[in-house]
Image 1 (tube, rainbow, N blue to C red):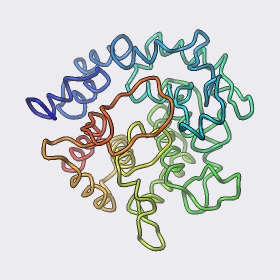
Image 2: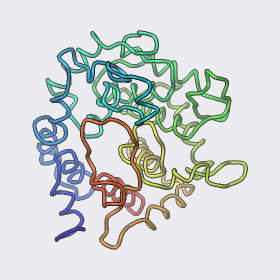
Image 3: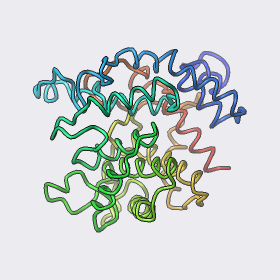
Image 4: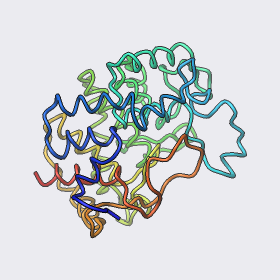
Length: 321
């Protein structure tokens, strides 16, 4: 229940990680003001709390992808744990931790020196073997100022014939997946924002976009049926999972960065977002992933979600502008 005031007021009466993005994306506050609010992510609220759980060696929970105390039975019985380094870094990026801050710079240096991937012992900023993981590593690395060009080159070479990516490629998959593709796209776009990208990375990103657009962001190309009903249900945090709101937020960022037009094939997904707005002007959290977390950042499934509402409002504002 929204007790009083507008939805904007409700969003502003929240954590600094949400406030600064509302100020920038929804109410056009001058940059010095939202940038000042953004600096609070490091010292207040969720950002400060997540940083407080960081290990002395720069990692979280003693591991890169899973915690040091991980037992495979936990995944089977309780769900994938989300407390290790890769998911903590991605959440700090979502919160908007200033990458130029001393704390952020020290964090990426420590991770580069100490973190190794569980899969093969590779240095963290050299990437892993799965496209989903490497896409997020590129996004985090590019955001925090790390040279991730070698991972980008690898991802470009791993694109499938239909234009996207699938982390099951090594197991023989020849068809792209929505989830793998959005993870790689977000990484390539962040890399392009940070460095300008390369001709090859830009071409790969455009082909991945086309993969999603041809499917109206959620439909099977052959039958036109929804590829997964969960794609139409709003999830937060997404982690590696896909939904149409995540995709729309990506296309918004892509268009704003490159000056591209709003593709009409996004229209059906936009209509779905509009249809899910509650009477009080907010959007609900439809579901969340099981598994160990440091702390919750939403009020629970079925409740209005500030994160989902922020993303939905800025997507619609971009689309309708």
